[in-house]
Length: 144
Image 1 (cartoon, rainbow, N blue to C red):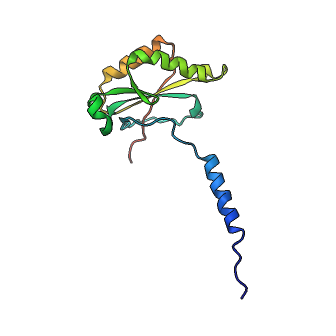
Image 2: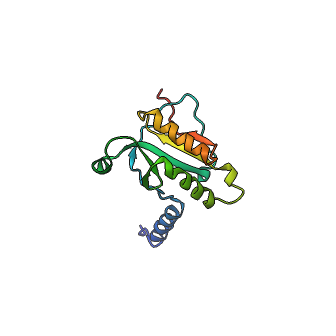
Image 3: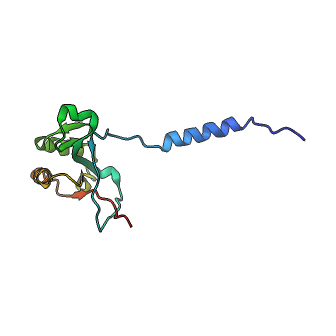
């Protein structure tokens, strides 16, 4: 019986490693708030996720509760912000897009199911003031 040659095995392993390194997307922002998305009866999947800007609303995670408390907070990118900062956030997100894609930009509100509606309404009002009128709410499909 001739022995099995393993000379090409390392080439295959490195090719697979390179493939996964190129195709894997790294997470953009750190999740600083706890979010349990509510269930929805009508759920639609997004076509282009690159045109979305996310506003997270929920109570801070355990590592941030000592500093920020347990009340619901707004997270824009990697920092806790107030509703006054939403205008600058939307302007920066629009500037990052190409001229043709600016009209297609959608703001996605990822709010915890137990968050009071008052803070969500404040966010929506501020989005109206800065003409970000395409708003989407993140939700999950109901359990069967």
